[in-house]
Image (cartoon, rainbow, N blue to C red; front, side, top):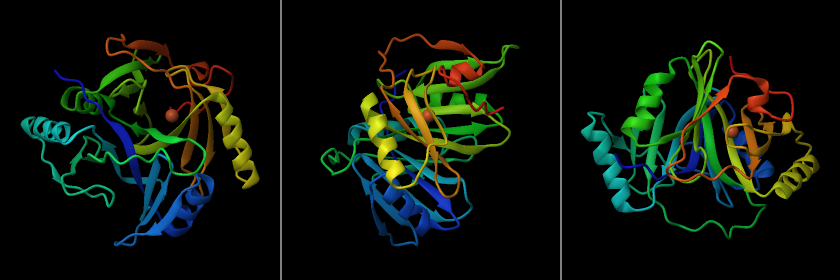
Length: 276
Ligand SMILES: [Fe+2]
């Protein structure tokens, strides 16, 4: 079965105050903010873009992946439809109308498009929108969808002492994960992450955020799965956003790793937040 190649392109997050949360992201993550056609707010910066819609706090309207070619886009759509799963028109204002939407077993909307535009020269500190995570009450159907139907691979799993699966980190290319799925009390958006690249940029981002009076909520630390350095801040709706550096790069034949469900797995330097 062919492996999926995709990158996280943008997230669409609902908020009771979409304008003010968009302005927060504009300030915190150095993005331009513009109003869209349907009451949404679009944030665009260096290798990162987000959309904010009116709606319930801490819910995800959709997430969007970019695939490398029009052919890859058509192949993925065929693969999904051949599995008996319906696709629908794109929900995203950023993609053209070749993009499509599919819904996962927990009801999350995934938009897949192909947009080759180069946003690496946009001004601002480096931090590419790179991964995000869901909490789920029923992880196996989610893994079946993302691994078997879409063609992702699991880089690492985390197990409780009784052997039950607690979380999985999935890749669609050479980065350790672009999606993490945690067993949690409810199906929910967990956090999203911007990959800065080098450790020194963790310092530069923390200094920049401090100048904006935006203080760290967790970290700095080092994750076990992915081996990345990180810190977390919270946006005005208390969504967690992560700045990461030095995320593990993997080869196609990397075996799936197994970790224990411990604080030290989530943060080898200290305190951690276990989802359940
Ligand atoms: Fe993360």
